[in-house]
Image: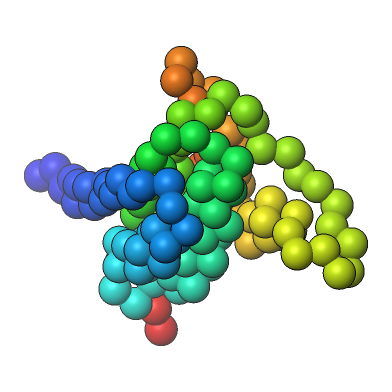
Length: 132
């Protein structure tokens, strides 16, 4: 008898216009795409907000978000049409920005950037533990 593991959850996808109000929609979408009771939902919501904001402020074109919940990890991918890669900055204590990638580094299990022919994909993964 062959027992197979269940198929992974399908990717949830969203495309939003490059306007500031889209960040709230991206946050709600990413949280809802996490498995019910996911221990990573708060981190996913915070980190997708940072990455989507970077895409809206520094990127080009619409912002596309994919959430891929898998056993033990949630992967989030954010695409925009700018070829400019993100750079981690040092933010002073009174700076209004510059902490997003530091948060991503601190709260994700891994992250990276994939250049594409027309833009880039910034991705991160957050370890997910079953709810207790």
